[in-house]
Length: 242
Ligand SMILES: C[S@@+](CC[C@H](N)C(=O)[O-])C[C@H]1O[C@@H](n2cnc3c(N)ncnc32)[C@H](O)[C@@H]1O
Image (cartoon, rainbow, N blue to C red; front, side, top):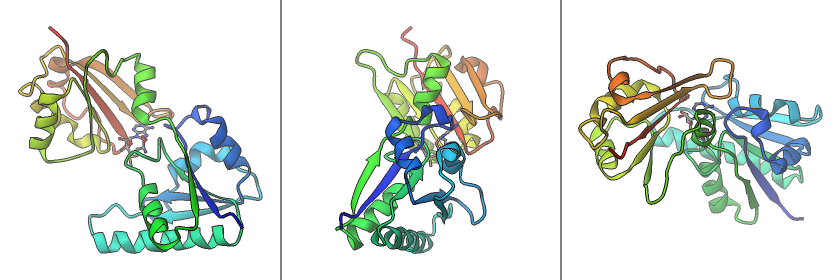
């Protein structure tokens, strides 16, 4: 028997922004695994693809706690992988969902690594998805890079010295994860090569009813604090040439 697990990138939140392949796999799956940060918390990826799921498909929620406790994390990666393995070995068509693209800050990689260690006979097939910042760039009509410009992607990180290094060497920075640290970053950017006219674009809850989008200059945003307070935030900072 050919054993395969599919990981499907579900895009930024709009069900119309899935690939045809993603929709096809979701429609024909026997079981769908969806990551969530807490037991009982609705999965965002699941909400995005809900309309494509057949009634007969089983939905299994897998918890990936947001913690830095590596032992606890490893324990969850193992338990979650075991559940997926059971489904695949029983011959069911199993799909693992992830928001955006599976290659970017996704829980998927922990499942993939665990599978490679424990069940290398299970083939994985990964379907790429549209990441939040490409969806954001499209909506804001913002070019992320041109010509020889460089781009850095930075997760919520309180080590501002690392952010400063990236700011000094990149033309565009994309900040992901927790929006509550964006104010500190904005303060630091002007001393790290971003002039006051640099473009700053901030989005929160893209492709949802609560969507917030702000496009402004660094000098204007530095004055207003607390622009975004959510985990589901993206910020793009782009240097101007003059
Ligand atoms: C765990 S990472 C997953 C990234 C995802 N794999 C991707 O390709 O976009 C979650 C972060 O992605 C960003 N994100 C993903 N979807 C978003 C959306 N619809 N609106 C705003 N931010 C989003 C936020 O920065 C959020 O904290």
